[in-house]
Length: 110
Image (cartoon, rainbow, N blue to C red; front, side, top):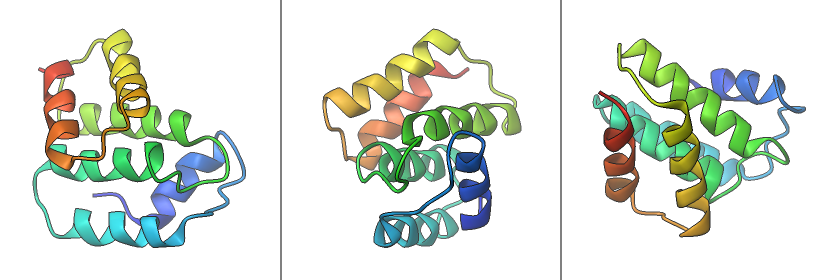
């Protein structure tokens, strides 16, 4: 499970790590602590980054990096092109449903 500091440090690889939506960050951290399912944890993180824009810059890149980290930590294979499509789909369709995001995640990992 990622902590707030971990998410900020991943964003710092792409930008300054400047949180502009602290409420969303708190929501993400609170919810990922309450679930054991890695796909649900990842769904909350992706929603916070891609829909709520937790950071000033680098949200999409941070989301992709975290998604790949979760796949690798859970020994899941993935298609990099499909992971990028998941991110694009969430953004373009403004998907804020955790369950819908979970299904997208499950569709690209095996």
